[in-house]
Length: 410
Image (tube, rainbow, N blue to C red; front, side, top):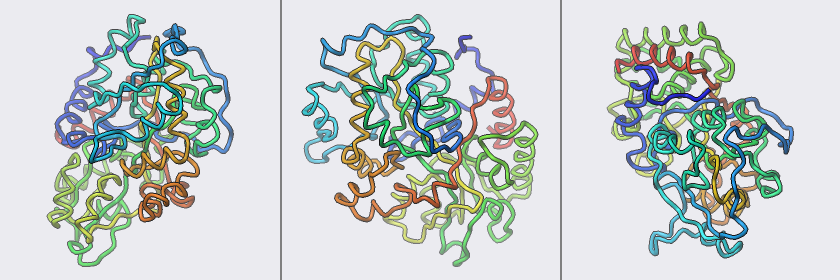
């Protein structure tokens, strides 16, 4: 059944407007990864391989012109690929063209998941080529395209590096079991951060402290993104974001509402929390790891913590939209970025979590500090604490967004 973007409920539309005005995405993907939140980041963790089979795209098989037309049209977020600052050239894309002879027409025309969906929906709904062969969407939006039958099933024969080098814990998200339609481009971690000067040296190590520690009253912020904030709260309550009930969600909302009523939480923010955390106006917050890497360069008082309860990890994912004209070429480009050397080139620039096994050794050749940064290359202990927010039905999304909108006063 086709989902009608134009008829989404008011709570969901309000959530979309928050994503467009909260500051997320305004400075590009290097500052913020998920423009409107994330669903089901990692899904069930599994050590199994990626099966080569899956359902056919409901949009039908495309007429692939890859063998005749050596080109691939790639749409991505701003500042989300490696760039030589002097020449403005993109080394990893040029390496792909040199190796395969396939030219990449690269566009930075994804600024928000919902905005982009609205842009391509008419063509996809009509069974037409969008003019794009490869797109990059956050988990929850990637899940929507798969659900609607608007993504092409990927051919494992063209994805040998991807098949071999995808980290095990990314292999089976609930919304795309076995990665039949998607492969992660990069991931972002939602963690707890604090300014040790503002807390007078006190360590802030849990969401519970954010919500209940009286020494922080009025100096705490949480995120305007439902899945990030509520996912962290659910974890703190001992619930799994991959598998929770409506009652669990309501209890988590009530817990945060109490902190709002007690003036414990100052406000809910997009990525504008960064400067306030750096100068000590806020003492602690729920934060995005990608921001913290940048902030710590100039603000050594900023610390981040992976709570014992765990953290939320979401990905942006490479997908081939239905009816794409150059599907094989797009698959080869996906595979290119699963070569550890190319993955390292990308990670060194975007500073987000790499989904590629073996990237740490290659990244160390470029920058040893980045290679040892757990916000870019999580170790096994950290990876074990990663969770994703489960996929929501349209009815659940409306109900949950309505509760969250009321909570944050949107």
